[in-house]
Amino acid sequence: MKGKAPATVVKQVRGAATVEALLVLSTFFIIWAGVNFLGNLYQGKMLAQAVARSCAWRISVGGCEKIPDNCSATSASSNSGTAKAENLKGESRNATGGQEDASPLQRQLDSEVEGLFSQRISATGGKVVEQPILLGAEGSTVGASYSLPCNSKPQSVLNLASEVFGNFLGK
Image (cartoon, rainbow, N blue to C red; front, side, top):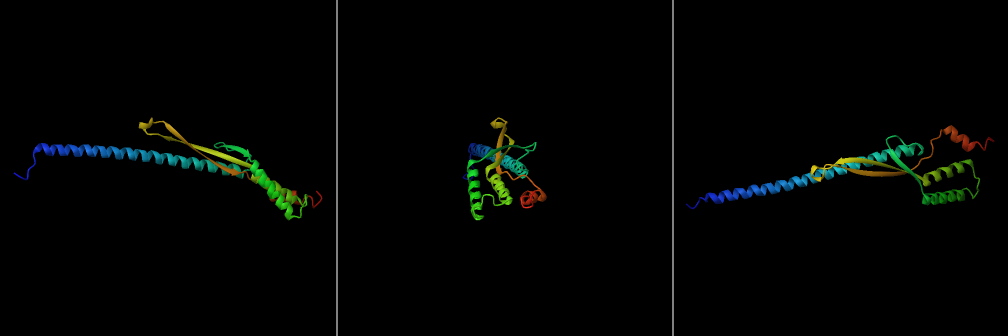
């Protein structure tokens, strides 16, 4: 009778395996739920960044004059940007021999440099991500922002040429 185990020992071993399986499965479920939730948060963050980037580019291309309806943004001027612009303007004047009234083209260039370094637009975007039931089943809001310098106001070539060369023609 060497090969047979008592019935009580077999039942205890099967019960232990069931308990171990439940512990492992519940642990895997909790890990899966956490990874799924973090994946949803990351996806929401990426969508918020895409919205903010899209809004910032649309506003910047338009010269920061109009904010589209579905965008939220703030405009800011930078003192450090103004210092950089002044430094570049000084370098360009030195390149033209130090003449203050070098040309209308110089004034146009100064205006472009000033606008490029001094005014910025910062657009924000947000996305609500649902939480699991165990965490309260409320939404978590993830947000992002994107900042760009404002472009100059769009001008036609004819207007720009008449502004630059108007002094030469006596207009």
